[in-house]
Length: 187
Image (cartoon, rainbow, N blue to C red; front, side, top):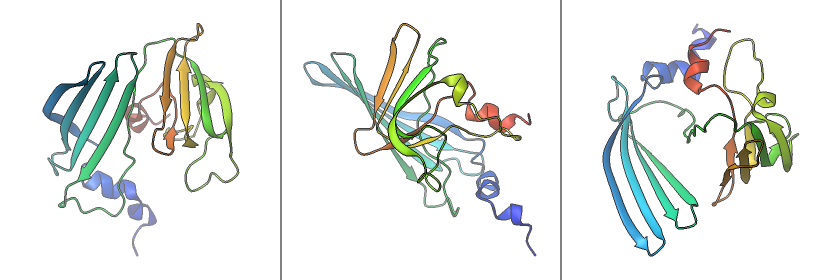
């Protein structure tokens, strides 16, 4: 028989080279769409050695005069990429040091995922980046929150970022580690 581990999505992704993706910006356009609004569209090709053009990723930033930014992201999968399930697709933001306070409106207070979130009630929860850490035996992503409508990440003075799911809900987490850090770690 087939080893059960080989059936996991990770092995399909790794075989397709999705664990070592690189991105190349194909085009960047900037236009002033209103007196106090600028739109920046970045088209990026994302791929690996095995699939150099696995995804087309478009980010559209609409920047308002008051400093607010709306980010729309769209990912298209190349027809030649034959895998059963795609890995998570999302946006990762890096903030300057000191933004340790985490508050969100979504399911919590414990980590939850789409396939196991019915016991996590929707509410406003507050924690810190350190408190969100889950010490799994094998390092992996952790602390996910589902059905999130809004996230606030700020420093002790209350300055930081506010992220709102404009069209429905999103998933969110905070960490001192990148996904790449976790992927390469064994403890």
